[in-house]
View 1 (cartoon, protein in one colour):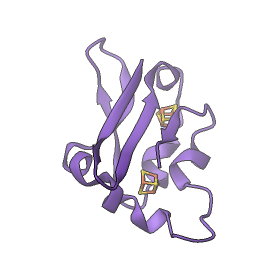
View 2 (tube, rainbow, N blue to C red):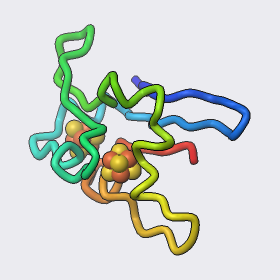
View 3 (cartoon, rainbow, N blue to C red):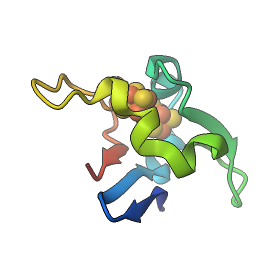
Length: 93
Ligand code: SF4
Ligand code: SF4
């Protein structure tokens, strides 16, 4: 399942999309430790699988939570994306 976390407003569309099917085979959980802002966590979903998710308190301010990783110029690779060998994490902006 592709889980979408975030929102859309006049400034754009700000979503983190997690392909949670890929999380079920992941032992490393590297995304959680790689995120300097504590945005990502592991939850048990409706199918009893342990998958990555955006923590509740970041969902309505994700643009700002992720801002330290996304400078306007010379944006480096995102730590969460780099840490996920399965390529399960995508960002809409
Ligand atoms: S590292 Fe990737 S596959 Fe593993 S839990 Fe995080 S998002 Fe899921
Ligand atoms: S972009 Fe940075 S702050 Fe946002 S989820 Fe990824 S590692 Fe965490």
